[in-house]
Length: 264
Image (tube, rainbow, N blue to C red):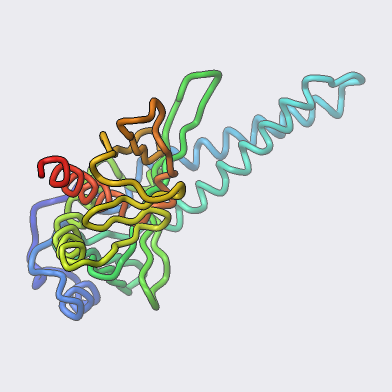
């Protein structure tokens, strides 16, 4: 299915999913998301078209005395076709897999097995790739990467899943679970790190150094970049979203700590 069905209880889940959820205390209720067949078919069709055009162009190069620009087009379509074939392979690999989204984490089920990713010790990274033609963004691909110690990395890609629905739910549930824990750590005097960024009660750590929360005008994410706006600077400091684990938790923390510091 391409969108979540009704809320289900863990007792209704397939046995491998139920065992994984209970072992990690993920909660009693979940939504189920499956790889979207139309997404997979569309990705495969794009790959076939790209390969066919590349073959046609190279045949033209071989039969033309002065191919010139035709060679450039052939090379570009070959590269594009190869990338499309890779995406199609990744999408086909997800066919038949399902995501079971609980309050306390998610379970990825495929091939009769299931792997749990609890929010307590899972890092989630979001990758955004904009496909540009001229100066216009024609399409955007999203990837969510899940890593935790001793567990294979899980990649959820917009070429296979309806991440417009699933992505925000993942972000909301992870933030709900992790932000209070991170705020408690900061309140106890600890520094919490999110890749190249860090937060404590008084400062925000960036690749360029520490800044006080009273110096920070805003922190947001835009077009694949975390932007840190300072009152004294016209341009923001930027860090790629893909480099910041649990970036949505970081953004919630930054807002809370900035507002609290500037209210004092």
